[in-house]
Image (cartoon, rainbow, N blue to C red):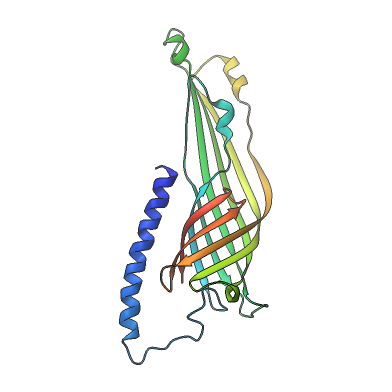
Length: 226
């Protein structure tokens, strides 16, 4: 699935969830004995818990060195999942949230000998696969008192590990074909800053966007307040 199509699907889910929650909120407001928190108007306060599902744009484009005649390429969308929970004490005009982050993306490139030789020397292929998994912890400051209603602006830091896995395969029996294996796997530490914002369709559902280095440089997606 193309990345932009996946984001459109997430947006459709957001609209559906918004409609459902609007109906639920209307029903709840009609109940006389319903208890309402004093901070319900806040997008982020000392009791907030949020789950984010994002689609990334930009990132690990290893395939660029392998493009051209005879090459094919495809990649999965950069997917991220994060959780954030507010610290109870307010600091200045906002609150601090802490939580975890998980991201995944994989890319594949393949070269086929048949493009040049029409199978005269065998239909050999050379496949390259790069996978990146990132696991980390995040902390962000939310400036809720300084922004408009239904809007949450924040900035923070992410620290964790990025597991980079590389795999090369070929069906060419020639030992020389192994010389095309020019990659490696590794584990890297990763520290970065990010800025982001959310807009709430309802008390619980929002769309969000973030700029910063995680599994990608730009992330768009859905937030759900637990």
